[in-house]
Length: 85
Image (cartoon, rainbow, N blue to C red; front, side, top):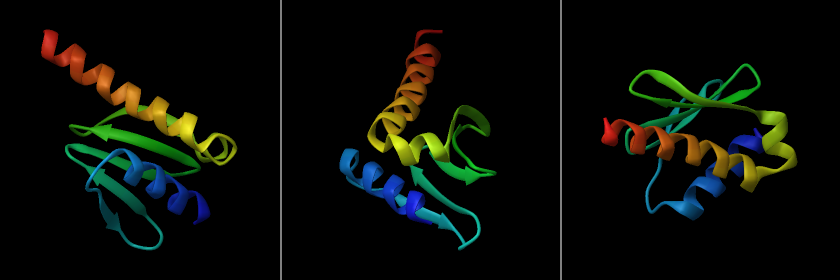
């Protein structure tokens, strides 16, 4: 649960609004059209029903800001790629 709270604080640092979704066993965060879901020891960045990026909770626990930035970068890269097509 500590990693979920830390992820939420990283998310709140970079955005004005983020929504918490789910229950105590399956917490996720929604920002715009991207969901960040904690599943089986991983943090998944999900956009349009597809997993864009997957990072382990263990990596996030060791390097929270870096891991969060990598998740964000993968989502941004996908948006740029989709806009250029």
